[in-house]
Amino acid sequence: MKEPLRNHSAPATFTATGAQVGDVRLAEPAQFRMLLISFLAGGVGLLAGVIAYALYKLIGLFTNIVFYHRFAAEFISPRHNQLGGWVILVPAIGGIIVGFMAKYGTPKIKGHGIPEAMEAVLFNRSRIQPRVAILKPISAAIAIGTGGPFGAEGPIIQTGGAIGSLVGQVLHATASERKVLLACGAAAGMSATFNTPIAGVILAIELLLFEFKSRSFIPLVIASTLATAVHMQLLGAGPMFKVAAMDFNIPRALLFYLLLGVICGLAAVGFSKLLYWTEDQFEKLPIDELWWPAIGALGLGIIGYFVPRVLGVGYDTIGDILNASLAWKLLLVVMLAKPVALVISLGSGTSGGLLAPMFMSSAAMGGVFAMAINRIFPAANLSPGAFALVAMGAVFGSASRATFTFIIFAFEITRDYNSVLPLMLVSVIADGIAMLLMPRASIMTEKLARRGLYIHQEYETDVLQQVTVAETMDKDIPALPASMKISELSDRISRHDVEVSRHQGMFVMDSTGQLAGLITRGDVMRALAIDPCGNTGVLDAASRDLIITYPDESLHEAAAKMLRNNIGRLPVVDRDQPQRVVGYLGRSGIMAARLCRLDEEHVREPGWVGSWKPAK
Image (cartoon, rainbow, N blue to C red; front, side, top):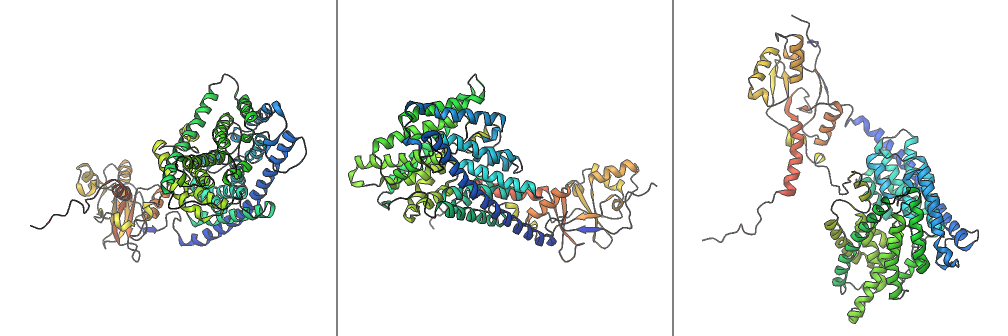
């Protein structure tokens, strides 16, 4: 007889943690790591706040030099320039510079920044190149400073995310920790730009993290708070837009808000499709993509010559719209000209943010809507500023599928609590329309979807964390006596014996009925290869170093043990008596929880209606 496969005299050993998964000893290091990440998040938040301020001033510097020929960093609109016809060529100069930066620096500076941050999180383990952190804000400042109709928020979100990612790359960090730091930088960037700390946190959760856990929420709040504190210190503590008190006409205007929600949803879908259609047209041009931003900027310059308000960020115009200071004709012009200028320039592959320009055009749309209703129904007496604010949050929220973020955002920039009810109503209606017409992508994910990178933006609790092992384990234990020979087991397998054919792995029990090992069909094949006669005992061929689970553990913990140890089954043992087997958990037990969730979502159960029958 050949030498046994394993040392029969060695006692079976049981590991409950499976490569330290769920080990109590990890609790203290995990807490320490969260403290460390929170501390780093604070530094990222402060740095992002300073960078946001620097970008704000850099845009002002370029705007002053290009449009007013003076060396000053005051943030000013280019619409008051005296360049005459030369204003057509100014954006094209910026487009040429950005084109060279994209071709010879990094193509990651193209676009509005948030899709690139999403791609880094979901497909690149939250790694962003250092050059992005340098070139993105500079390219955005050049594009906006030469008249680009963009906002600074997209670039600063990507830049802040890059800073957080770089901190995570410098240190020894997991991909999840790096993701948290990246999201902290992005949230801090938005908070520092608009003085909206709550919206910054929610934006990071909805568009970058796709989770709501203490490990990420605590650092996010710290980063966002400190970045906002920097904004308040350097730019003032007031809201982004100073608006007069508004009458939201609740509940009298509810019907009109319902109609506005539908219009906002259609506008969000229309703008998204128009933007990517424009990108497609640029890709068909028979010239090097280096020149595309210049061509798009030339189109912007032509529009800007006739409608100067489309040039630059346009925060002043947004403020005018919210305060109902513009006549309906000018509102109509802004509503149409700004998005056209935006899609032509951004679709060409230049660098800039979407938030501010979409806010301007959608706010103008809301104002025009209210004025039109007042013309048709004078008794309605709607507030154009109120409808402008609501539309501003609803259009971008539905276009980006970050509805909750922009409900809070629109509230934070005005700090008028009366805006909450119409914001909620209009935003969710617009979101529903956008989901109906664009079910697979949003303005943030369409670019990635075109490259085959589909992002599931909805998230929910993991069913595996809600179900215990006891609920899905097989209580019919596949047990074999330790005295059985391999030949006998092999014969039973070949005869498709029901007791041994139902499972890939079987427990080996000693003479006292205690768990001694686990043998799989692969173990049987290896034993027969060494001893074709099969005289080896099943315990000699079985694994004695077992990974186990307990009935009260979650399926999430059990599945983690399987994955980390590359095994497909676990003995379920009594927590107080580890050698007493109470069940068997295989892959089918894990999938049973998923099947239960599918049934909950798709299987309709009989209701009360129709089931009641009167007594005879």
